Amino acid sequence: PSNISRTEDRVGLERGICRAKGGSAGFKVAILGAAGGIGQPLAMLMKMNPLVSVLHLYDVVNTPGVTSDISHMDTGAVVRGFLGQQQLEEALTGMDLVIIPAGVPRKPGMTRDDLFNINAGIVKTLCEGIAKCCPKAIVNLISNPVNSTVPIAAEVFKKAGTFNPKRLLGVTMLDVVRANTFVAEVLGLDPREVDVPVVGGHAGVTILPLLSQVKPPCSFTPKEIDYLTDRIQNGGTEVVEAKAGSGSATLSMAYAAVKFADACLRGLRGDAGIVECAYVASHVTELPFFASKVRIGRTGVEEIYPLGPLNEYERVGLEKAKKELAASIQKGISFVNK
Ligand code: NAD
Ligand code: LMR
Image (cartoon, rainbow, N blue to C red; front, side, top):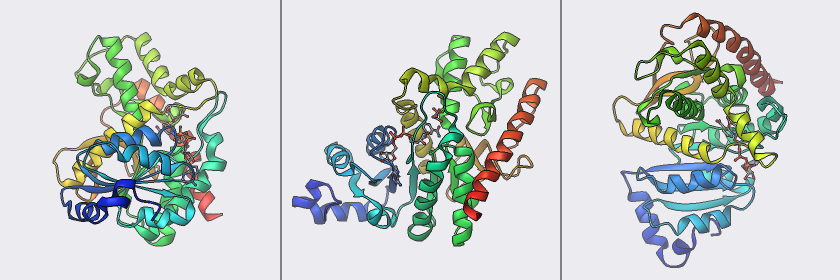
């Protein structure tokens, strides 16, 4: 078959498959959009993750090359490539976790919502495949606009009768990663020691850093709060402009996606106390989807934490975020039900 890595194909097929099947310690992970700017470094980093026993790389272009390249890394995961729609079902069958960075990125001057027309259809098709082939998998959705693509995925799963809100997570980890970095710079700390909750969604004013809840406890001047809020909310645009037409964040996103996927896998394994921010079906506000801290366990999202005490600045930000989020959520829902 064309979809397996060369070593497996030539000599190690049976042993490779035995290892993949017998690897009770490992999870099976698929990346959809694996040949893209995020997909390639994400595939490389997932191949390095000891929790992964099987890694399926799916894209509509270039997966044979990426798969061949990555399969030479001397780490445990067995890598297989899948090319084009006709191999989507095979790519998805049996997966525990599906990570989706498929779709077009922004160019300078565009909003994430400008990607809706192309990416909504891509996400819908991929989620139809998930509903059919691995309805119990955890889904990590990266494709923009996340504020709308997660509602799209939920509607597709509802239509298929497979929706489990605990297993669909929009990836907002890059906002947290950026917030930790920028806050650490201001405080003169190591970013690894800093934890900034970022709630709401993943676009402009919907990205709401809760600077009053930073750990370790600290205080900021009003000028620092303005600077940090603006930088965190516009971190994506900062990269889009610096890349000047060649795309948006890919490397920091791959890092954030792997950090998040690893948290999901540790939760699935049964590790206690796995808490990350994610955009999920939620009752934390009156909106049907919202990003906040969630606890991830064996069944997916097992607890969604309330926002905690907000200061006046954050309460104003929350109202702005909810207004934009409501429209983006509705747009996603309407797309599937039109
Ligand atoms: P890219 O263009 O470099 O890669 C996208 C890949 O998706 C390509 O390889 C393309 O062939 C593939 N693709 C297109 N249609 C497909 C389909 N139907 N099935 C499978 N694969 C398909 O883009 P990128 O820089 O990797 O960004 C991907 C997406 O991630 C964009 O929508 C971008 O806005 C988003 N993004 C989200 C975050 C976040 O924080 N959630 C961060 C960065 C980028
Ligand atoms: C990001 O935050 O970097 C991504 O959402 C990509 C973008 O378009 O900004």
